[in-house]
Length: 172
Image (cartoon, rainbow, N blue to C red):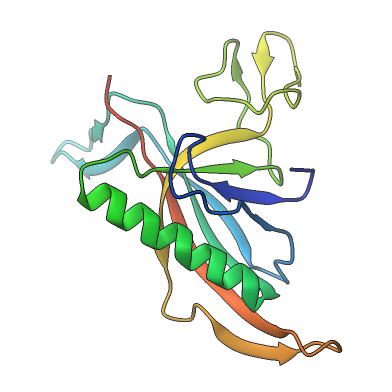
């Protein structure tokens, strides 16, 4: 794990163990993080007052990812997704861990509501903390996943790894 990387991995106790997937070749717009906010404006009353709905938990992170990587990394991604789906279908803890070292989390009053990667946190201004996040996620492969892009000089197939990830948070 290092700055400018996105790492996806199984929980430490998972079996069979699958290698961690480390991505860093995102191209021009292949890394698109987002936030699903806690409160949403759902309507307005006839008098113009806002009607807000929300959840009892913090915001959730989302990612749309398109990375140009060797075919071997596409196979790791598919193994992780298969393990996740099989484990979740059996009512197991199949959530994968996504460590995002590309973008800092929004600053919050300390302590932060999200799990911060050890050694990455700092105080951008008084009373607030930020850092890189460690998230429990559900992955979904895109229809464009594994699109053939090129063959490298050493005859390695370069594929498009295209997927989305949504942070999963249990209500308190």
